[in-house]
Length: 238
Image (cartoon, rainbow, N blue to C red; front, side, top):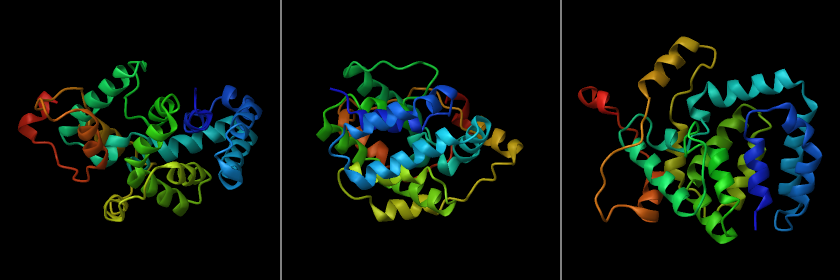
């Protein structure tokens, strides 16, 4: 049975479209069906739904791009925050993709498996206890994103406040502090951003030992906090 709350949040974190705006009523209705959500969390998500639906579409899209596409510290790709440009990121992608495939979750090849809306869609198809445990492994990332969005007075912070409350366990404050210590990007400096993304091009691959895989490895990858630079001599093999 699908957890509609995770599915709704997945849609709200996606690029705004006319279809998303037009589905506002359906999204609110889906959230009302989740009796575990509670009034406070429901109101936070409804406020964002109303905000997106009530904006000019171009304005909603521009806000989204400046927040999530042009600012690495607000990236919706989970492994960007914990692996950065290290070689481990490619193997982390492979392991997460394997987890999806093992559970019959197929994704479009054009999207990376650590994309948060995609991860949430996967969680929407898992048992609630498992979904909350997996979400808890990302709690430090969610908390850092929440803090950065609060600083920007962005309505999108509502999503991360809700996700934090749904996650099993509390975020590791030392990891949150390290993530928040990362320097801010200038979303208007397109040249610098292009250079960053070119340097961080990642392909799936890497080697892992026979006993270094599965849920335990995925948990370590989601909690990693050392963003090691790429060895220039090895960059061509990434």
